[in-house]
Length: 227
Image: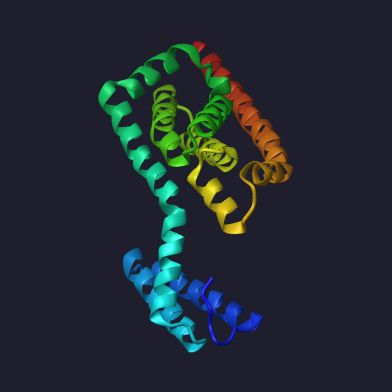
């Protein structure tokens, strides 16, 4: 931690967080400024805040170095995600998934399948972006070929990708959260199960019901065409 001559009060720290939130909200959400510019502005604000409470340049720089050192594993994971997606695209893995997806997947269970498959891939690889950018792209292509709802399929893919990423010991965000809190990784994952498992069950039920409704609609349309 930065050693300062005086410590900010709780309300002072809270006001800094509120200021950071407002800069993000106004700069990106309202004015649509580049993210890099907003991050520079926030860095300047927090730098003045630290200097006001007695932190010198060496102390601020040392804090930056420590935080970047903790983030190196997450950076390496993000670099590997790009290589994974590129390899799958170049090698034809995604077109192969689309082909067999059309052959195997029942449209009534497409939403549930999209959710469960991305849960497994994201948990095994520890990347939500990598799962959505590889198997997720293939599942959306299958949904487009089957003429089913693309928004629901995309929602199932994103839900599964983030669920698996949240509970994977290989995930950069999971590791960073445990490091930031000073907690043991697997204990942190076990604690997240209390909220994640009910959400997983409700999501499975919701996507299953949505698929059944889709099956009924398709059956009605087929019967109408036959008549």
